[in-house]
Image (cartoon, rainbow, N blue to C red; front, side, top):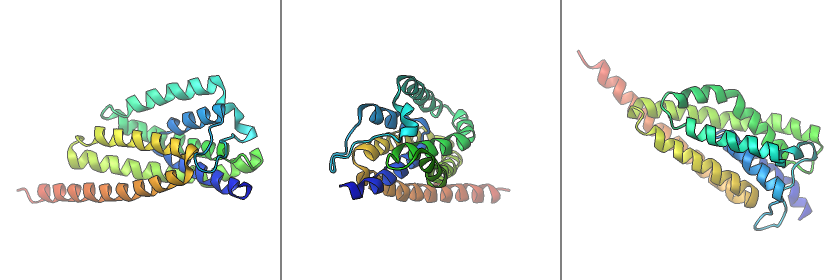
Length: 207
C-alpha cells in the first residue's frame, strides 16, 4: 500500500491539473474539500492529505474564495464574448491552478519539492488542456456561429467536476476519464475544423 502512495498522488495531481485546464477553480475547490474532510480512495483506502506546505487549501477562508470563484467562472463561461475573454485571462490562472493542485496532492514530498513538481508537471498539463480547449471553443464559435458554445461549456463543467472528484476518490478511473476526454476533444476539434474549412471555401467561391 505504501509503495503505491506516491504514484497515486502523482496521478491524482495530474488528473486535477488537467481539470484545472478546463476550470481553474473547480479542482481547487474539490481538493480543498477533500483535504478538509480527508476523503479516502474507494479502492485502496488512502486518504487525500494535502502537502504540509499547502494545508491552507482546506481552510474555511480558502474554501469560501474557491467556491465563490467557481460560481463566477461557471457563469461567465456561459456568456458569449465573455467566454473568450475569460479564456485569455485564464491563460495564466489555469497553469497556476494546475501547479497548486499538483503540489497539494504530493503529500509524500517536501513542500519545496512538491512545488517544483507542480511547476514542471502540473502547470504544463493545465496549460496544454487550456490551449486545446480554447482552440476548440474558437473553432466551434466559427463553425456553428456560437450555437455549440453553451453545450461545450456545460460539457467542460461536468468533465472538470467529475474528473476532479474522481481524482480524489478513484484516481485510476479519473485518468481513464481524462484519456477519454482527450480522444473526444480531438474528434470534436477535427469536426469543427472541417466545418470552418467548408465555410471558408464557401465564401471564397462566392462572386
